[in-house]
Length: 77
Length: 146
Image (cartoon, rainbow over all chains, first blue to last red; front, side, top):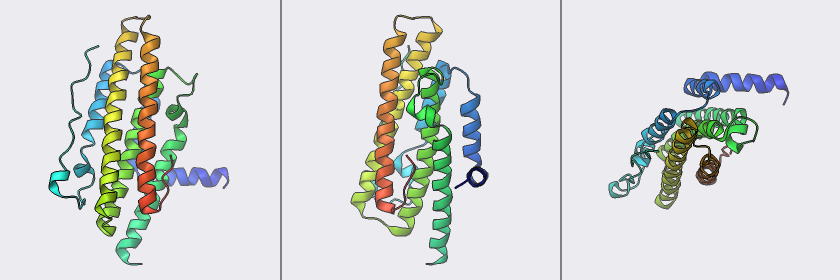
């Protein structure tokens, strides 16, 4: 696979996934992260949701889809 | 192969490619290569990349579940792996926050220890992500780039 082919594939993948393009830009433009940045990253992880949220087509029984408790407050320091 | 399955395969290939591109472009962040920035920054990048790639993998898994109705044991295994990854990422973010506070307040005596703690948390989270991807790969038969 030559460089032109790889670049074309990357362009196609990014064109298909705008949110990935946005994420990549944010990653590379970010300077030294602050505590607020880490709080935002943490909120982003939790916002992904439970398994039930990510897999709404799940065939698991409802009582197994209760999300675990991971959303404890971030450390103060 | 029906139209629905063809659409799934097209989406699957697109997703796999997108995940591969993301991981390949930011491989230094994922492996915490010294000299490519501080541990704080590279860990932050790793969190962002891992979040995107897992989100894509779970979207793929959701489509697979809808079309193929895998055994419940397989679903339980993926669910467990996903929850372990989520919990490990929260630990990474907490460790990163603590390190950022220490750096911001010039608490230089604690920075080395906190850096090691953050690096360890990132490695654990990366391990959980690999486990999740391996499970999805095993069930769907499609390799997700690690």
